[in-house]
Image (cartoon, rainbow, N blue to C red; front, side):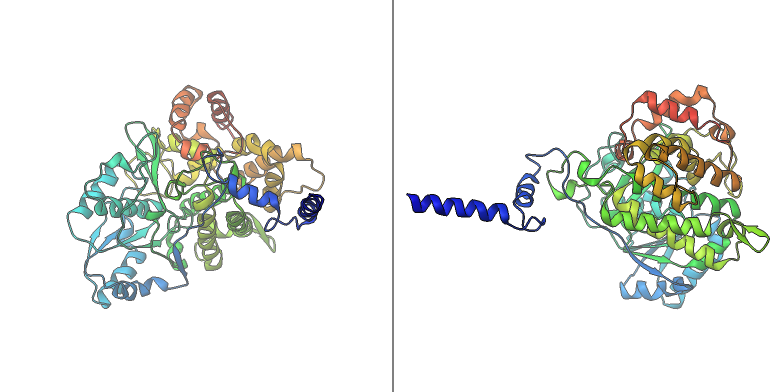
Length: 476
């Protein structure tokens, strides 16, 4: 008996002296056992996913060979009417013709698509037996092509089956989709890297979307020459989308605090919360935005390279890559309040005419609708992760050496306001047609966006949302 007691005592001593690193410690093994979703409410894992990306000046000329390699017999090329006459589409189609690839073009994509425009594209896709899809355009085109591919591959599905809850049923995508090659012509949405397709749901006058890793393009062909055709305001608004993708994903609720814990890996959402890998991409995207989009001084000349100079291939190319970097970051971590609040801003637009956009309908461009609330949002979220907000402010040019943690929200908000003022952005929601009377409708349109708003690091009420919209009515 005494010998047995000595053995037990020895084993306990060994356990206490054992290596405490996560790979060997007893607490780690307890954590693994606790990681089953029957015993915990929040997630314990994250999953990285991204499209293959090919980058280089002129790489869009290779797409015909890619389609040959895929043994494509009937290709659906999607774009919009403006782009259909511009060099990016011409280059792609010439590559298809020279490689003997048969195709049909759908150029009816709507800038800032709606459920109606999605359904038109889906109908086109269903009416033929396409075996590969190609999207040439900005986020509107790529997202529309994703939806067309999804529903053409699931012909019996109801439109709301895959739309995010609570607007749709949010069913997981279990069937295979056709290959999709995305050729982005703007430097902002990052849609070439993500499994997300966003649209205006007209009955609610708010944006929603479909989110599934199955929607990710097979290949994103990032050709920086295509960004040279972007007008100045399109370049600015696309850049603001990159900025907010990076800021929101970097400050999002950490993945291990997100609930519920999925009962099956297929239920783990595309937007999972900030995580160590997404952080790298998001932070790097911020550095690129700070270098090429913000003000710099060359001699006595003040320049905003990526916005004001369409011939600056280095700046436009770098922002194109920044869009990819931020896309990988937010495509896995997610975004939060700026995007959640942007959807009703875009969806309830009344008469605003966006400079640089050749469209026949009122429009608040996506990047603009996102960035207008950014000063108020990051001032609100800063108390939950002040170090990250301070770091973001520093990357964007703020001097934080004398600041305290409680200053994080104010300094990042001021940094963003200064940035927007320098780039001549409209002075808040009031300047794009909204008033305080519209706040209840804007809040109502934000509430269903829980796919993203629940990733805010700080919990919020309807009153909080009202105050954030009110604070965003005027920026300067």
